[in-house]
Length: 221
Ligand code: IYR
Image (cartoon, rainbow, N blue to C red; front, top):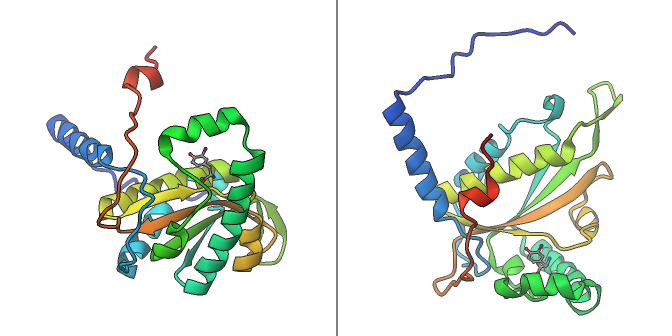
C-alpha cells in the first residue's frame, strides 16, 4: 500500500520560557502521583474514564496495530469474582511461590494477599495485549511489539487518570489467565495488568518510599 502524508498541522512551537513553564507544571503534577491501595466506593464520572482511555489509545504502537484492549469492570459480581481468583493466586504467591528475596523487596510496600481494593474501587480496568489479530477479511495478522505498545498506552492511561484527579493501582496477580475466562476474552488477548481506579478512601495511607535522584536513572553522553 502506498503511504499517504499530510502536513504536521497539530505541532505548535512554544517560546522557550513557556516550554519550561509547561514542563515544570507537568513535573510538579506528576510528583504528586502515588500508587494507592485504599479506595473509596464513590463512583467516578464515566466521561472522565472515557477521556483517559481515549488518551491511552493515542499511544504509539508497533506498525500502528494498537494491540490493546481495555476492559472496564463496574459490575459488582465480576469484581467479586476477580477478587476471589486474584486472592487465591496471591496467597499462593505470598505463602509458597515467592522467593524470600522478592518478599523482602516488597516489605516496604506493606502488601499482602488480601486485595479488598478489587471490590471497593468503582472501576477495574483490565488491560490486555492482543498478541495477534485479524484483518477485516479474516486474515490472521501478527502484532509487533505488543507488550511494549500496551506498556506505553498503560503509562499514558495512568498519567491521564492522575491528571484528571483520580488515583490508580497497577495490580498484577500472577498468573492472570483467570481474567480471560471470567471476562470472556479471546485467546489472542493476554492479560497485562489490572488498573484499579477511583478516589482514595478518606483514611488512605501510602508507604514512605523514595524515587531515585535523576542521576541514577539518566546518563548524558
Ligand atoms: N502481585 C503481588 C505482589 C507484588 C509484586 C510487586 I513486583 C509489587 O510491586 C507489588 C506487589 C501483590 O499484588 O501483592
